[in-house]
Image 1 (cartoon, rainbow, N blue to C red):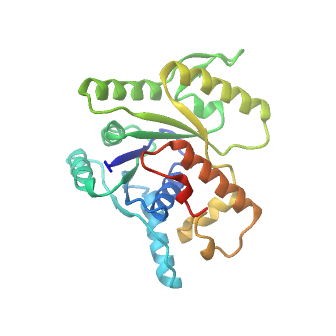
Image 2: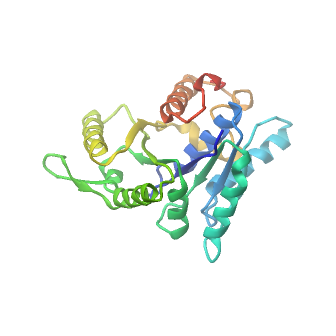
Length: 261
């Protein structure tokens, strides 16, 4: 099976990008996919720290917590060449997940340019929607694509010109809430409109739940049922969201039925 590269990219913080990345990496590993991860934010290292916490917690408790291999690449001279080398060396695995920094940088763009799937998590609000589209303040109709959409468009055009495959761009609506139903409808309509015009899909992602905030220090995920001290209806609902997300990504050669959830 050819290597499939997933890059998570967003220039806004607080959208659940690293939480989503780790859950995807662990889920694919548990489903039998040979998976590795690269964290390109060498300053915050959120994804790398999450996975390190997972390894340390498993060792301290004598647990078996399947964890994808992971490295961090620092920005600076030679970073893009190192990324290219790491991708070349990853041909023996099935899936490479790259978590890019929450800012624009040459290294982030290099990762996005090599991706087969780009996932852009956004909070379900027009504050986050603004990076992909500008809306009319009276009608909420989309007036024009945003700067991030323009960047992805340029990357796709370059890939097409080089005849090196296509990029599937997925907007992930994280932190969906049962409240503010009117806002949810308006954001959804705007995503439908803009997605049709510039070619992205949007999926419901991970809802706003306290459990995600508790996972990080131990490196746990929704999939680690035996390691969780309690298991509530909130966990059941969140696992269903994760399964739907993975199914919606339509990754080649991946059967959602193999997920242990």
